[in-house]
Image 1 (spheres, rainbow, N blue to C red):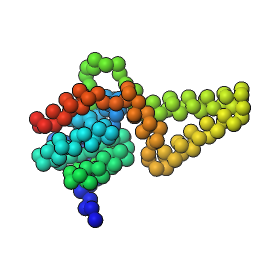
Image 2: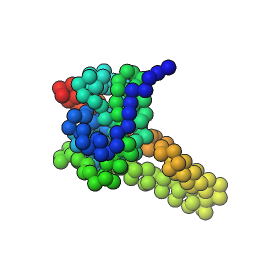
Image 3: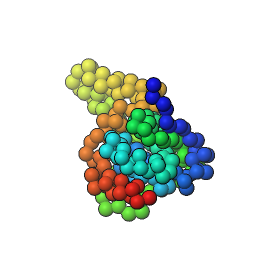
Image 4: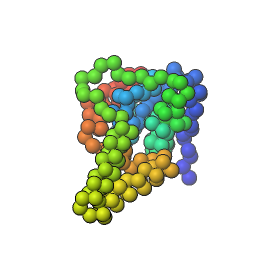
Length: 194
């Protein structure tokens, strides 16, 4: 039986202990650039496996707090870390809860790359486009195309009920939502120095 090595911190507790935590943001680079907890390091969930040795060392020096937008991805990240013997906590409700309690998110002051859209904005654009396409094709070509719209609607309901989003997971794999190897290596080098 595997022992659970992760806990959940409320925003109040996280705020009080922020100075002593190493914060790992597992969202996509675009979401991270849109605003993150003060001092957070961006290691997207898909890159977490590559970062395990560095995170193990960081967890020996201070407690890890893993965050995402709502807490679902950070919970998955904490489970992965736990399976690899790395203790970590997740922020209850993620950055959404952090903001709802009046806390600020930090944003990069300068960027050389074109700004990226937050994942929720990408999901809204994609879902809206597919729904509109299904309706138009259903009216102009064949009513069966309206099943596209129904499928997206069902996916959105499922997403709300499970606090997960398959569309966000798929969009997160697109090249413009991926962390460059240089950016990840820089983040890991920064964690090793701290």
